[in-house]
Image (cartoon, rainbow, N blue to C red; front, side, top):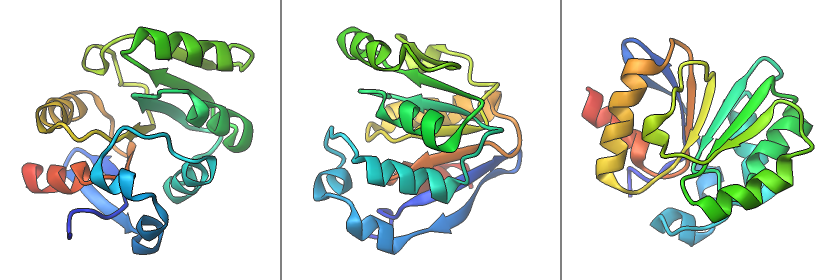
Length: 167
C-alpha cells in the first residue's frame, strides 16, 4: 500500500516536505505496526528512527503517546538530546514511565492530552496514531505551533495523509 512507508518529514511554514522514505526499514517492522495496532516498538526500531531523523544533542524531543518511555531513555542516553518530553494521556502508563526516567536529567513525562500541551519548543516530534480525527487535529496544532525545521517522525501513514491534506 503506497501510504504505508516510513517517512521523516521536516516542518516548514510552506507545509511538510518528505525528506526520507525507507522501504527497507518498513519491511523490518512487525505487521502489527503496519496495521496500526497498539504495540511497543523495539529498542532497535526506535534507534533507527532516531538515526534517520538525525536526532542530536541540540534537539528537544517530544514523544506524543510515549507509553513506556523507552524512547526518552534512548534519546537521552544514546543521542544525548538537550531535553526529552514524553506525553502520555493514560495515567497508569504515565506513572510507570515517570518511574523509569526519574533518574534522567532533562527528561519528563507529561500526563495530559497531547492536544492541550505547548509544542513550540520542540525540534523533533515522534508521533504515530491511526485515528483520522486526532491526526487532523494535530495537523492544525502543528501548523499553529511548530517552528520551521521541526522534524516529525512517524512510522504509519499519517504523514502521507498529512501531505495530501496539506497540499
